[in-house]
Length: 156
Ligand code: SME
Image 1: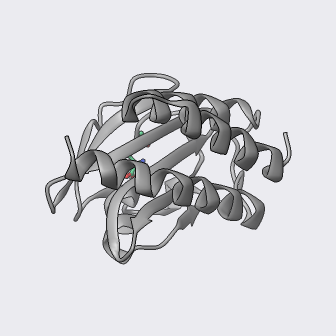
Image 2 (image 1 turned 60 degrees about the vertical axis):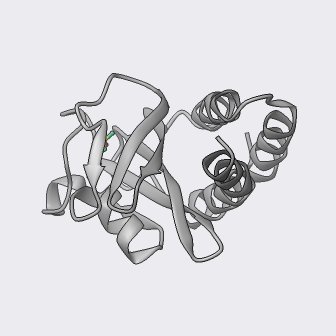
C-alpha cells in the first residue's frame, strides 16, 4: 500500500472510531498491514510526564509495556520530540530488545502542539527497513492521532 493510501485509510478509521482505543487499534492494524517489512507495530501513550505505556500493538507481546523517558529508542524519541530511525539496532546502545529477530526500528513521536502525547513504534526483522517515505507517512499518521489522544486525556 502506498503512503498516501495508508494516510487516507487511517483518516477514515480515526474518523469512524467511537473511542480512542478503537482509533488506536484500527490505526495500528492499518499501518501494520501496509508493509511486509513491519513485523511489530505499536502505539505508546504518555502516562504522566515521564513514562510511556504500551497501548495497542500487532505482533509478538513486548516485555517493554512501560518505558521511562530516559530509556530506549522510545524514550529518546519522546525526549527529543523527533522521529528516530535506527538502521541497525545491534549498533545502537540505547536499544531495548523486544524480540531477538528485530534488526531495525522507527519511532515517531505523536505531538500535540509542543507536547508529546504518545508515539508510534515499528520494528522490522530486516536491517535498514525504514526510510524517509516511512517517516513522512508515519508523521502524518501521528498528526491524525494527536488531537484524538489529547482530547481523550483532557476529557476522560
Ligand atoms: N525497542 C524499543 C522498545 C520497545 S519494543 O521494540 C516493542 C526501544 O528501544 O525503546
